[in-house]
Image: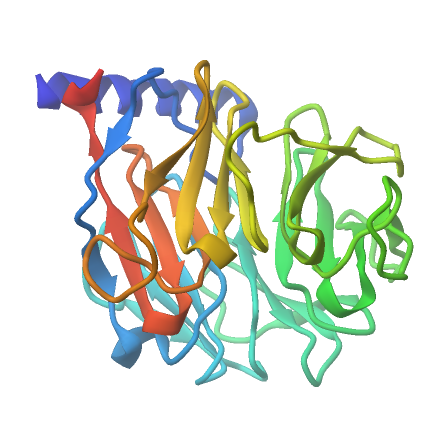
Length: 311
């Protein structure tokens, strides 16, 4: 039963990858999908440093973590449980990263260098991709090869085409001034762009998720029902367009589905036990629907296993 559940998820994701060419996992989950409440520690502070932020799991189940404390990116390739490679050339306190379907690595290098850097597949050195005036707490590349950066300290999200070498970027969310209106943001963090080019922003300072329709600067707030968010830091969508959110201030992971929003992991308050998180920041699905999460203040990466027999 469990084997067939994993096989169905894997087959669906394989088809989606072939159609869309995306590099990240968007599992198709049943309405009653449940994750183990006892997480596995995938990586500790020795591997990811203290207080890490960003991570990415690609469709080959390679895991990438931005180790801010040691100014490097740690990589576990193809389901490996040990670090297989490290990149650090010129990095300074990276907050976020994004990996493309051809394994190019884009890393925030804005703390002192004011840019996003790119490592080509198997490259040992980087090239600047976008210059800006601060750090990117979130990075994303959409299906049209547009690079997005959420500028936490500047209260806006900007984008730039990767098909041109010109350093021309446009504001796609926020105004550059902190606010709580439909056109402003307050310390935006994680971002996600769907196949219709709608932009979702974890609007940290406003404790909300904002959705900006393609080409629109007037956002709408996602209604999360009885689930009250506090300082969300990451948002991703599954194959059916349901939202999953890191609810940082409440130290938990929230998910939506046909029955609305609910807590799906770390629902018992903050702490350091296998069932708890302490100010989590970023997260990703793997190809089986398991959730990897950056447990920031515990300085570790936790893995919550999808229980396929829950459906």
